[in-house]
Length: 220
Image (cartoon, rainbow, N blue to C red; front, top):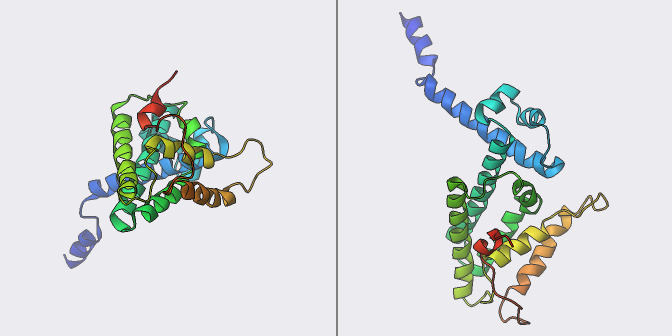
């Protein structure tokens, strides 16, 4: 009787909940592996290679994601969510408004959005409700960081979220070809130069109008 009780105590109290947690972890590992391999190998990277990088079988990958498009959709959501979380975190943690902006820009650069954006744009349904909600959260989070820096008199007033994201994407985009294999080592250095250019007083007058995220979505 005692042995039976001990055996029962060693079993998971909620085996279905444990299975669900394992499934969530597998899903997160697949998305993380896909993000890495999209940067390294492009949008046509074989799904079985992604499964191998994630440490799961092909069947597990397809149990979570029916096809490449669905996986890319969730990678896009993951990237947008992670960047929004970075903005929300620095806003909450950093009392210096412009230092919060600096922290956000460097953290967002580490998400490799310069490499991912052109890849993800090829395989997503841009008006999907999940992506719309993620985009709105991202816009609010970044605007809160920029707005605080602007209100503190540290950020020039003639730029908007879209301007920041364009520069961040361009400055973190790998150079074509293989001649700059160590390009990443320069990214944060150049981001610092860019951020210095955002401080007040402005050294020059910008042409055109400030860009929003909505402006970036418009097609000619």
